[in-house]
Image (cartoon, rainbow, N blue to C red):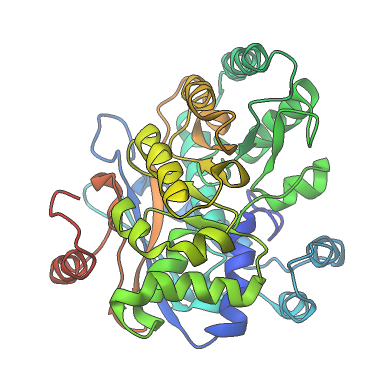
Length: 400
């Protein structure tokens, strides 16, 4: 079985789920799967593996949280005891997921049901699809090549840091990893070679299970689905981003203070991220558009609001490689606090073309929801009229 623990997911799934339990327990949602590189020769033909994927999801739905796992979650300062009690009773239900083969060779995956009971599907289902695909198409993976590539990355980081413990990176690679065993090997190697925690160059991992297993810091705050859902459950569309940040602050009281900046694009984010939020949140995360331009705009925005940028953290997490990470580090070091979340390039770099797969929320409470980021290819919505309305409300150019 590919997924053997419900902790084998990203921390932000739990931090968002806690908000859902406390503030939006009745929300109904729908998620859809997309393979962004489907159609490329020899890439993304997942239809032959539908039965295998379904079987793995069935296994996922047989899992429950173990006492040791619940204790690990409960020890986190921002996780509340009633949420842990709820997780002690929690099961994923297969009835909320459908996986269908399409004539094109692609697959359709739909997740539909109560947000509280479907939020934990996304990451393990993506990890399942990846691992099923690669164990069928690369039955004897070139692990030697993967280790050589990882060794090169580590040496580049060490050279850039000159033994000073920077730049620090974090593993964000669960959803698109080559496989569960390889993911753990990568993290063990990074921990050994780079050092973890305050003195090392590995800040931690988004994967809660591996954080528990390897003694690493679990990392994560909010994802796009949280702010997307606020389009349907907030007071009015134009205020949905502000509503999302305020609801988050209500739950965490200043903890987990990293705001996601690209659900409506950078300009709309900055309009809403006023002096109050600049002071309240510890920083923000980049996930689309030019990262250098984003960083400069973010630092200028803090300065404009009379907030010292050096007290704030910029997190970069969009398709990062080690060379790009080092470039960003050199541009912004000393001007603010920095963090870098690296996903696919760490956990799925053995020489094969990785699947660019996502599962995104497309509806909440019967209404369409969408992301309009600074990278148009990342947009995902099934209702063009709603997209047009969203652009109008948030003053987003049609090129976005």
